[in-house]
Image (cartoon, rainbow, N blue to C red; front, side):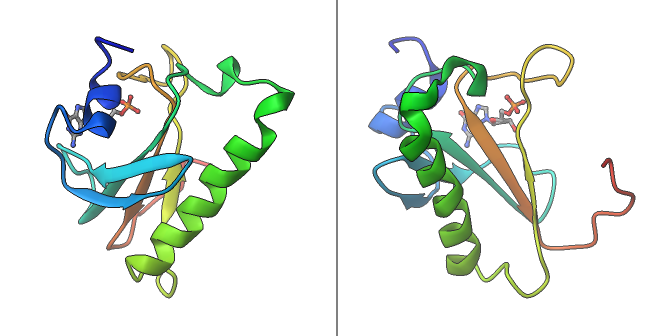
Length: 114
Ligand code: DGP
């Protein structure tokens, strides 16, 4: 999508600190990290959120889950753990309407939200 910031990052039109890429997603360091490790895993398909996918997208969505595990292994996050967050919609304060997951790690995250 022409005016989507994550589509531009995926196409290389906006620079980013790339972490990982496969057929399903493009992962990069968040511009405003909330933890020492804060990686954005953006779908390589412009859909606003999980609500925009259907049963035909099972392989695609599963591919992103496997990519998250690959990124965790690649970045050495498996031993101490990590948190994966997907903000969906207004109340969750999603700011970029392009499906993405946050991987947070690198320290104790304190109280659990869930
Ligand atoms: P969310 O609020 O869940 O939609 O998360 C969007 C995240 O994207 C937010 O943590 C900041 C990050 N972000 C927004 N614009 C850019 C950018 O241009 N570069 C990078 N690296 N991250 C960005």
